[in-house]
Amino acid sequence: MKLRKIALITLCSVTCYLSCNKDDDGGLVTVEIRDRAEQQVKDKDSLLEYLATHYYNSSEFEAIANPTIGDLKITELAEGTDVPDGSTLLNASTKLETLEVDFADVKYEYYILKLKAGGGTESPTFADNVVVKYEGFTLDDKVFDSAVNPVGFDLIALVPGWRKVLPQFNVAESFVENGDGTVSFIDQGIGVMFLPSGLGYFSQAQAGIPAYAPIAFKFGLLQMSQNDHDNDGIPSYLEDLDGDGEVFDENTDGDFSRTGSFIYNYIDPDDDGDGILTKDEITITTENRDTIEAVKAIPLESNQKLSNYIVEEENGTFTGTIITFTDSDGDGEADYLDAE
Image (tube, rainbow, N blue to C red; front, top):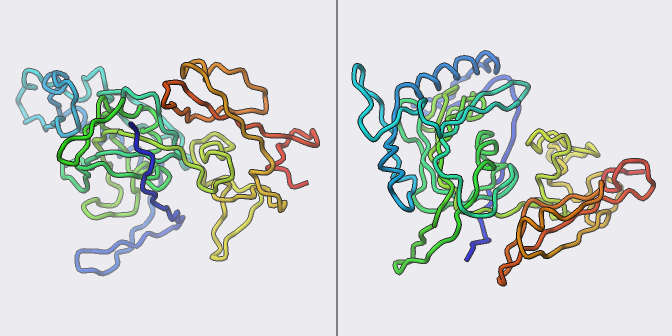
């Protein structure tokens, strides 16, 4: 059984030189925007120090047949003491991964404690919906937000780090409905992300999070569903034409909404502004195979894409969606992007 309806959260993206945050008395405090590259150097030092001074209950966690994020305990190592037996220093764990990503013209380094990859066959893209449990905390181990019950998010609406981390995990293998109305997920993807402020809230202070604070999240990835925000037949992640993992820099026809904001391709049902809807300038077909591997092995033409989201049918077979980007005039530009 799989849940398909997931809450959607919208995102308002604002670029500015000064950020206004509320102080404790309700007034506004102007925060000067720092250089992203310089801030990343500071954040990296802070994150590395945290990883070198905190341990987790590795043996206890790994001994649990079906663990959740509630079973994971991260503790600061008291000065002059050794890591307790059965625990592992974060920076000594073989499950800790160091990754890099280019974002906002800066190379960011971030870290993932990848405890369980997730037993399901599905993995979200950066533009999909996810159902998760999570706990967010600062590097002084103060929890600023959490969800003990499953909650749905649109990854595009979250801080950039979530869009970089969650696609590296699979969803839960399955779930069981308990007699009390709750649901238990089997073999979910579990990890902890440690993010520099540039992949978090950067200059925007939040409740419990100062401006320019590196942050961390424990998370359990339970389910996902694919997004097509404008219902134009192209999954939102494929509207990322330059492959940078973001959709806020793609606006083929340069159009604006009535409020003056860009209508990016992922929310534009007519990407080239030629008066013909995008869904009428592409061709969508489906193919069914016995295994998910067989679907992924379907040969494609150079102008075709297999959707990342492959559906498992009730009979145990798998169905993939193939999008053909037609080029009627043969000019090398797909019709849906070619206004001429």
